[in-house]
Length: 67
Image (cartoon, rainbow, N blue to C red; front, side, top):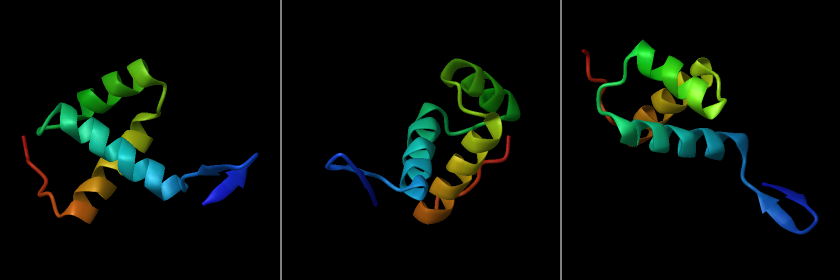
């Protein structure tokens, strides 16, 4: 954890995990088009969202659903 002016900032891996949780909650079946549209609407890159969701699935042992 980093600290700036007395505020504890979460680590990048924690933020990535949280982002994965949020974006995975939108849909059980996430396609490439989802990442592109989510990236446009949030300002995150589609690669970041893909990594975030993959990491969240790995940590929580959520199987990948093939569409």
